[in-house]
Length: 370
Image 1 (spheres, rainbow, N blue to C red):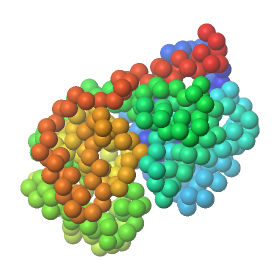
Image 2 (cartoon, rainbow, N blue to C red):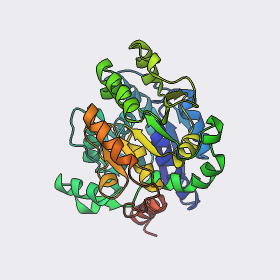
Image 3 (tube, rainbow, N blue to C red):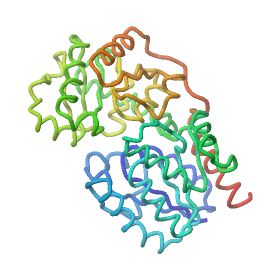
Image 4 (cartoon, rainbow, N blue to C red):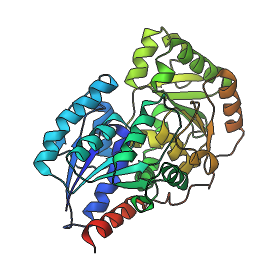
């Protein structure tokens, strides 16, 4: 059986890596092709993830790069079509909610190929988010819907998805985390920065709604600094965010040494480096979806700097707090998080490191009748 899977951004790598390993364990039933669209084009932000996750090199690299949503989606569709026509896979696996996800799903379905969507059913109910549009459209046209939690199932059923299309398998991101957690622990990346476990927080910011507006980005940075005046905040800064910080003249708001309290900028980190850093953090602040999930399993308090989340299970069954982006909301959420204990044992159902195996079991059952 010929299976083609697609990655475009770093979170995609963490989702596809365990699926590839699970397929490999079923050799020679499957012939697998990996396509990297190049939606994340920074070498530091992509290459290290392949190495850290022990992923094979892509069979095809499309080199799409940056552009508007329309330009990027169109470029992926144009470049993936000849690959699909040349291989004509029995199944195309897309993951997550980025432009590459929707573009590949659309192209495959128009070629009458079968499409499976991993992380189906996640909803923020915010149609101003490009990712929400990608999720809705991808789920609508996909033949197989693999979900991470029961709330995602409910979303799909409410939208009219046939129950035999929906398969609750768990979270493949957590498969990657649990497979690498001991390696990250031995790495002890906090020592590289010369900081003590539990004495620092980590921060990620990359969403356009947070970083492209000078007033909002300034308020978020100043609020975090004011809320934790005695705590170091390690900020591996996304290239997009770095550009905005320079453009808005905000470089003076950061500390110049990890030995001082304040927000300390570092270059983007590899998967294992950042996982290692988060393992020993007192608190994680983020506008990322994946970190809400990872901190839930790590038992580390998380403050999400957004008005909504497509992963509400991390709030009800995890360590996540939805802060919004106002000063009062962020201050309140940080205060609450700092007063909570690390090491929470709560986690959602089936977030146990075996989601990819369940996905492959469904594929075997549906396609090979074994």
